[in-house]
Length: 505
Image (cartoon, rainbow, N blue to C red; front, side):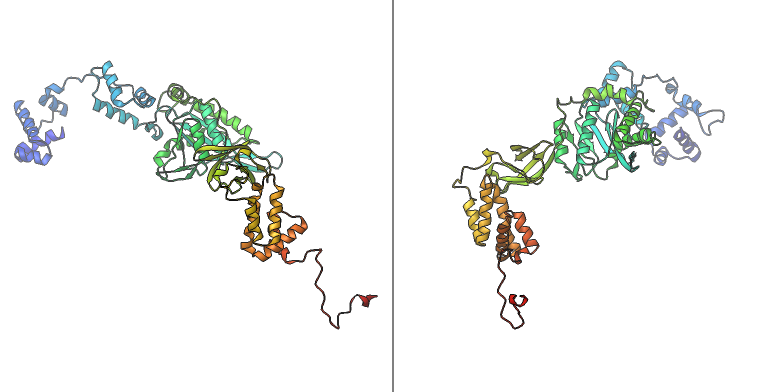
């Protein structure tokens, strides 16, 4: 309406041409001509009479627009929003098409999209992101901790709170733990999936060092145990990108809600153990998930039951058993060292770097993704677990290392060293089991010299310390340079001041 007024003023009062008016007001030349033609047709000049309102001018110039516009049925945007998250294949265009079939006089597709975007902007930032049903689970630790007091000593320890949030419904899980190590992280994630009664397609942690070894933006290195657990539940781990706050909106909002509605609510309670704390958190969590949304109909639980739960993958029959992954290289004795114990592998893998999976009861060894050995996990230290089938045929010609070669190498240092190595090999059920100890003894010559090693071997034989540990201790403490107890002292030189044993008689 403002431009209609300006067109009439510039034409009648200023006297500009229609083309100059169009250039001044940045409108089409035809628009200026249409306004002037309509005004001349109804006898409207300049100035416009004070008795006329802008509505009167509009009705006079554009009588076709004065009819009351038809009321078009508008979609229910909450239902549209939920439908859009229900399946990956559901799009706004499909929802508009279904809307138009029920309402032929409804808005067109461009208006439909514009109205929907306008409605979404009124939601919280965490609700504005489109998360498909059953697709994502966001996990992180809350920044706020909960104190737990020891009943006896009064000592206070801080408990950490783990939070998991489903992307589509915001259905939330929380649990307290005393540590943030890998085992706690994996067990907490497993408990969250059991709480949700299903697994999502993607698990999205923050770049936590426990679960993400290398927080690279493009190729983050996932901890093998965490990755194995995700594979067990048919999921994939995709960490949040560093320095990308929008990625964290969902879980940070979930953490904030847990801190406000659970941790803040229990701040005045004194807890004496973790079981008591998690019992209270469970009660408060039930209240939170049944709390109505402020800007949408329903609750976290109702939306979960309607959208997320039907889309989750079913849990496997057996829950994931925590396992730690290590790397080890097979020594020439075809054994690997794990937690100060030795476990055999096929002798053909000597010198190869192998993957080791440790559970509470088993040790599994993998080569190129294939399991090549499994042992019952040894208790204590210094234990040796050997599978007979891993041993080569007795002294096969192609076997590079033999007991005879080991003894000859030791004898090149000295006879005592050779005798010591031979004794070590004879005392083992299988000579190959002594290779590791013998190699360690022979290599001590590089650090202490062959002469000192030979003296240390002689002392070890005299004292019965037939092991690498004994020889190394002798050299470290310089005992190889001390005469043996049964070794006769050197004869004293003749001298006038030396009285001899007869003097005291």
